Image 1: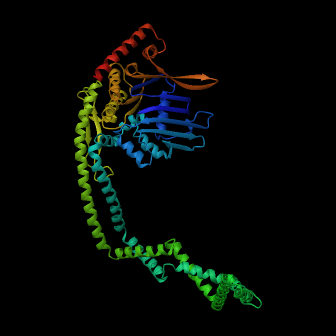
Image 2 (image 1 turned 90 degrees about the vertical axis):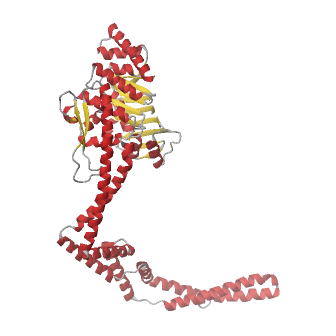
Image 3 (image 1 turned 180 degrees about the vertical axis):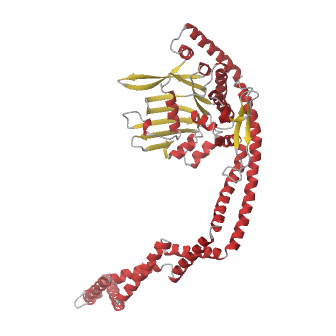
Length: 565
């Protein structure tokens, strides 16, 4: 449930702080006052597409924050938060979104930075926004299968998940089969190329660690003169005339003589003697290394040539010698398969047919579940439409001939058909429904789906378009029924809807210093009567319209009391 909403510098909204409660909240006001802007801000908060055009003129950024409480039954939202490493153990979540003039976009969930995708994933599980866009989706047959699956989600989800995994496997297998049945000449050319690559790699006689060893040898040969000079100088410093070891030997003799006289110098004498012998051994090792050093210009050329060969192979077949060897193993297998193409193709076709049969069984199981759910949906839609004064309407979920090819959703093609008047044939929803009929149809669907989802915040943006009279009253009562035990925010121009609301916000705009600003006022008592009177009469409010508004509110209170008992 949405508890708090803060909007800064969004369109004509400079600063707005709103608190919401359970039940039905209606937002009314003159056209252009900013009612839909508030819903647009909510849409942006839950991951909608952002644009710098939303930022209030003259400002650097817009900011939107929302505090939500999570229904414990909303397992999908809690699991999504947990999988993204977001703590919501108190069943509360704060969404934040900031959009800058530079186009930079910052999203946070409970203070943790998040991508727009994660924000959309979480937001879609917190609120359900119904807008004119959903009217367009309802007119699109491609969307109807998704609606049916949403209705039967608990029953269909396990099978659909199995189907999707098998479908991915089938697609991959079919792609392999297609590659194996391509033009014979292409396969022959592929085989020749692979054999050439195999010969080139095999003839190179690659060995793991060879490149590193060659680089080390190259380093030694390239620095031969420096190494030789430094070792010579070290040896001369130790063993040259009147150099290191001669002086250390003399020091050892003198300290030894002193220790003979005074025993307390014995430890010092041993230390000097030990240093002498270590240096003498080091001098011998330096001499041995000097004797082994031998500059071989030809060997450096050989190493350079071999390293160049390895680099050429790496440019073609892999970034490392190990990767090249692994690639050679792969082409060995492919050459084997291409050489015995018919056998391999036959095995692949058997596996493909087996996967197809498995997929067909899962697809047929999906169809069975959907057809059963379709009957239930038809009954529930019929019941909802009866309550919305479309009792003569007939609604049917039509299953077209199964597709010849599998799709990611199965083999079903589903379209909603409807007849709104007696004697008229069933036709696709897109061809027969008026704006008012679409509004009622969508409200019927929302009413049904609200029972199947853990989402407790539903937003209707002018769902009552194209209706009036008793139908408007029926829609008002239906919206209220959806709000019982949850939360509904509704933008409306109908006084019947406003009268049924538990909470009423009036949206207005003012101009100060040549700048337009939107403000929101919570209405109650006489203020609510005044606003409903305006909605009834238009500009001029009279005593008669006030009396009518009061009667509406009294009747609404009675209806709500009956629905709660």
